[in-house]
Image (cartoon, rainbow, N blue to C red):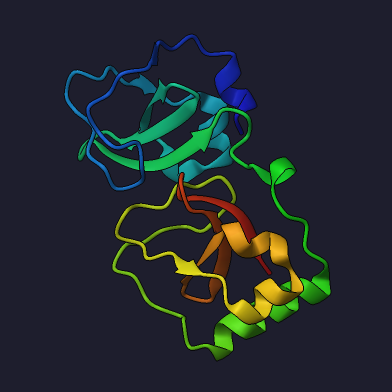
Length: 166
């Protein structure tokens, strides 16, 4: 989807006075551009939405409320190359561990869990259970989130979803 933005000529903003995360209301001085037709074809529910590029992130905004609905890293949204690769057995263990610790918490925000999405501040991110870390030590620096029946690994500093655990 990020390729659809590369052919457009939109000013990149580097200094903003708002938090670049889902749910934040942008300020009036930010000039928005209509989403490219290719993006609307891929995600039809974004018809009539607008966007701005802030540093290296594409920020999609609902124009009526001026709320950020999605933040996509220009490199494609995912930090997967610098992240973790889990075997199907490790994924299963992670999901089972999370489900048995009772850490499935509901959140009031409606957040779609997908790689590259930046989670809003009201979504609680949790520490990876020790039982999982003992088997996959590289998960020690990450956190996770459970929304509905979706479980995802999160990079805690940026609050970006790096991998959805199937």
